[in-house]
Length: 69
Image 1: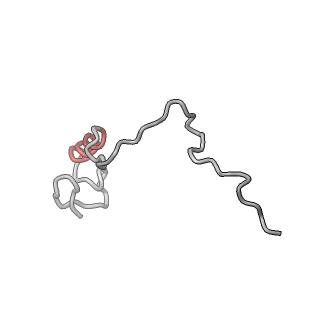
Image 2: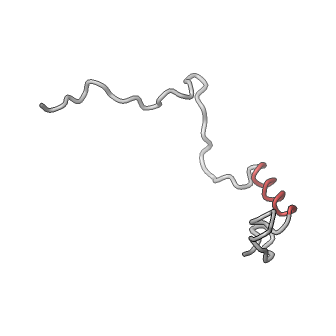
Image 3: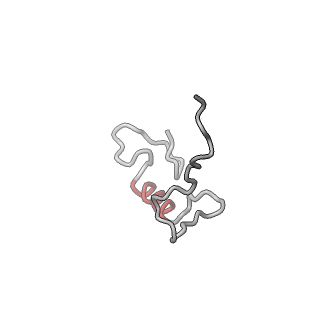
């Protein structure tokens, strides 16, 4: 396999930094992740501070459907 950062051939077995080839590549990847380098482009998500987090944004409609007997 190859290191996802530097593309150096590396072994999976007995490699404490897998899937990376070294601690340097592992920390480089962590830094990229921590600074948002792997962010997916798109509209940012926003949180409405007025609504509790556990509140259902689309509550079910009640009373509009009656079961058939």
